[in-house]
Figure: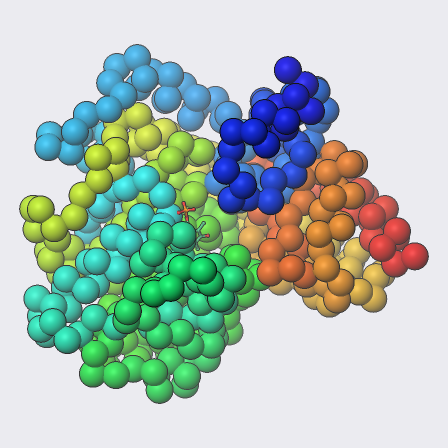
Length: 398
Ligand SMILES: *Cc1c(COP(=O)(O)O)cnc(C)c1O
């Protein structure tokens, strides 16, 4: 079938929750995708920071194929070796002692919210359940994570929201301190805001946040769903800030494109999740865990983190050079391959022009071009994208 035929069928059968572009990708390799008509695209969105190892990385494909032939699913009533191995791997690379697995970023954040509430209830009693999050944050689309999210456009139409979330401006420790009440149990933040427009906080911010949490006995939750798994050149973005959370959530890139979520915590907090308090049918099944193990091993064994730091600096530098030539470009920011370019004009038209010319671009928060390509993107691919973007910017300027 052609792209046009697929799109007509999609209109008939798929709910319209997304403003989908008229592109039908059917095959991928590295940073490239091909659509149903055979047109090639350079992918600078990477499945929204999911395809960190590129599309169909051979080690992930092999792990999925081998595990699929062995055991795809098994209930969490039993012990799952791939899940145990993945938990050990993750915990050996961060502050955490234990992991809980689910199927998405929203579910990982749900688990974090439930664990924070359960721990606080166990320790301080039932009044202490409020969680402070940031304005312009994004934590997911379930009711609890919509309530946690600091964006009206995500929340509207779904009242009443879940009670107990307070939003404060991001990168403002004083505002956060002022929002703490005797009922606060936790603070949940993205180390770098993704959907909010690639917002990097000042170097001291998380130190101050950690201090506030310690003074009031609050859990610090980092939502690393978008920025974790090597995206910033470190395995986890919070490493850049020298601040350790009590709970961390992961999803997007964790299993190289297979659906998974993880909530990691230190033992003191993890102990509050006793049998029957939380669960998931699919969470951490053998298939996705095998993919995640292969993904994590590849990142650690193939020098992906150093590479990301280098290639990220290159992309950032090229974007800055390009941006200086166009007055409507306001600035470039980010860490590693988590990069935003803020514009004085809406980005939607630029994204469309990119599609026509064979590059998948992305705009978030209306005016921020977000670059989250696979971490294996090459200099040549960056050069090609920059040349295309230059052509598009020249038209926008005219
Ligand atoms: C994508 C994202 C989520 C939600 O993840 P889903 O897998 O779509 O549920 C949560 N938090 C952040 C920071 C994200 O970028």
